[in-house]
Structures are given as C-alpha cells and as structure tokens.
Length: 228
Image 1 (cartoon, rainbow, N blue to C red):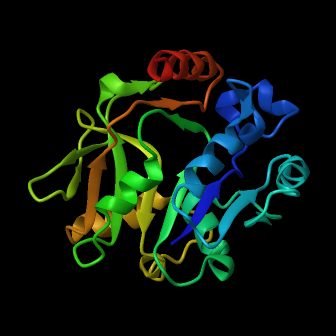
Image 2: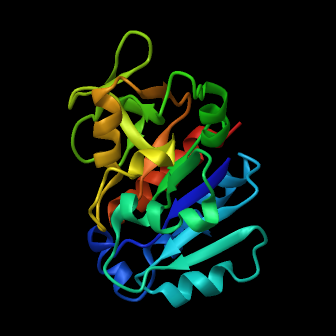
C-alpha cells in the first residue's frame, strides 16, 4: 500500500508563517510537520511515498531531495485540493488502495498508519478514516465530522468523531468525479451513500496544526502524552 502525503496547500490559516515558508515545513517540537508525516507514512512500510507540493514548492523539493523512497509531485497550475491532488499522483501511486495523510497533523500513541492497516478490510470498505473523539482532538476549531454506525460504517455528524487527516481509499472511486479541483470529501460522499466508508478510532491523541495556535497545542500534547 503506497502513501500520499498532502503538502500542496497555500496555508492560508497559518499566515503569516506561510508567507515565507511552506506549511509542511513549519517546525513542531523541533521537526518539520512533513517529517512527522513521513514517520507515520514509513510505519506502513510502503513501496512508495508521494508528496505533492505547490506553495513554496522548491522548499519542499529541497527538503525531500535526500530522502529515499519519497517522490515529490509539483502541481504547477491551481491547487488541486486533496481529491485532485490524489488523482494527479496516481501514475506514481499505482492502482491499489492508497493511504492518505495530511501534513498539518501530529499524532501520539500507536502509529496512525498501523492502526489503519490493521482495520482495513477491502471486502467491506472502499474507504477507511482514522478518527478521534473531540476530547482528544487538540487545536480543533469546530465540532465533529462523523458518527460510527453499527458495523463501522460512517455517517456525517457534527457532534461525532473528528477526522484526523489519515485514511485509506480505493482510488477507482475517483473515476466518476469529473472536476479537476476537488476535495476527498466528494469521494467520501459517494462511499457513504453505499455504506462503504468506514472509521476506526485512533487510541492516542491528535493535533490540528493548520493554524499558528495549533503549533503550541501540538507541542504541549507531544510533551504530555509521550512523557514516561
């Protein structure tokens, strides 16, 4: 199972830091967000990791240049968002299900990738999302995203669990979507309609580092959740 890391966003919520730095390279606990994501990706033992880049793309390319098993895809036109970015990278990712990771997130506890792999059942699922309850979602602005129904299928629920930016999807579901620029939410909606989008709860904590306050909250989470 190959891994796609999304690092092409403009980082509008992270301004002014992203005026000079790619969001994926913002440091958290002394390491770039992208390196935290790469640790999660490597836990899945993928043959290929693909990172997309757009805003300050040269910075991302330079950061990845010495890393083995990682390819960088620069999106030269408009930002394709997560769905369009995934489809654009398919020539490198191949036809099998792909693990997707947002680069603006940090986890504690067991590997997010290993939790997803252990729960993945392609006979029942076209997609699987890693979720946490609101009380373990640090830096979250807003409510929940999904409720886990009987049998593990997901339904939209703003009072439910929070999506942590990690999941697995079968990419053939992208075919009916004709837009060039679109979010993975459109793919998930198709899966929800057929009961094929499932969820698994991450046993650790998660931080949203998409905004400046999230940096401090993520670093506090890492200190508190990883101390002996």
